[in-house]
Image 1: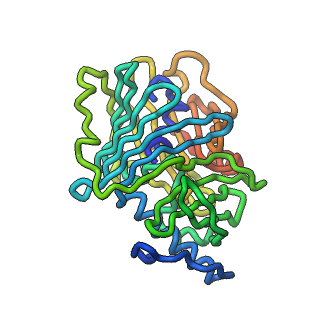
Image 2: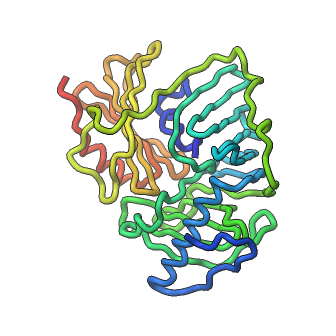
Image 3: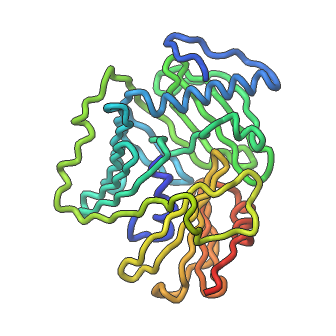
Length: 334
């Protein structure tokens, strides 16, 4: 979701911030082995479509470590494009507006806006598998029992890693609509590291376009994040190798702004988990470069300085994966 897409940037630069479709279908029964995995994948594929294609409105709670937030979401399909508005109901006032492939984060009290092009169509704060069948080499799938969330029965689906380079995930999916009602990231010990769940959700026949208007923010200071570098262009960050299953998804170059140097960012993923690698010249930034580790819920960060470059690796992955990438980065010679 958009919140996760911006998190690595916020950590580094704190000044910015084919399953059945019919209604009334019953939950697939429990199975074992390959049959159970196929059932789980069918649930996940249906869920992925529902999150993007359904019209829904609701309130959800998002827990990251010891921090708890309450947010309101309105989501609809307008002329074939996903539109959404996510409003924070706790903490600092802020909103995230989604219009097709454009994302706008708004801080009304600061009178600031941050715009960015995006490809991921997930509107919710935890990742969804892009193509469940394609990640089966690195994850196992299983169906669990039923649960209840926000007054709706839902089917539990679990994704567990086959190695130590990624976390496990759990989803609870409403059978009639396929909508995701709860999701969690689980560590190696099975404990929940991060989760969200709806406390209230409804499915209107149609969300009007007026629900996504942004006319009330004229005069706000606007920062624009650049689009990812197109395939075939020269990459600015290179790796000796990558952790199993991970590949480069996109790259962004943030131009210099005020006291902040140019920042190069590469986004890697395995089809579910994602990691961002940031590279900036250490001498161009004010103050001493940050070095060490940081953790917030399931998101971890690792930073170091090497040959005059500040390297920061951030992702919802175990420390082992970050350390692997840190060793694999080949910093520029000049």
